[in-house]
Length: 146
Ligand SMILES: [Zn+2]
Image 1 (cartoon, helix red, strand yellow):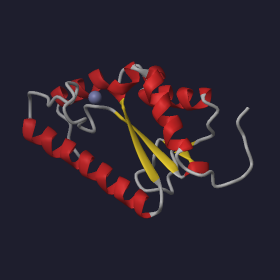
Image 2 (tube, rainbow, N blue to C red):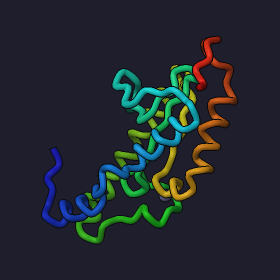
Image 3 (cartoon, rainbow, N blue to C red):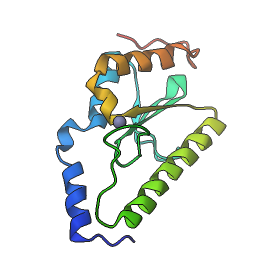
């Protein structure tokens, strides 16, 4: 178990505010608006993808830029206190993400990552979702678009 100092805790709390408007929820709404059927938090799949589109074998991870180290993103900062602790912790997150993606791809899944900061442009995220699902032949012939 990690031990959290008061500084770590306050850094953490600053980043988990506003659960109702979480990036994950935003992506669910986008997918729903496109008429795409999905499941959430499939624990039987590597890394427990945030959204899974079984028909297209598409697994989507919605990643916070800080926790998952969005490369080149200004939100991927490192707290000023206890930098070694944070670096180690955040590097582990990235390693876990890479392992999960590789394992999913090994099982024949397509993996897509949506970064928190990308949700400023929801239309383009929706477009990527559609492209990822249209690019693949549906696994079933039944149609469930409204
Ligand atoms: Zn970012």
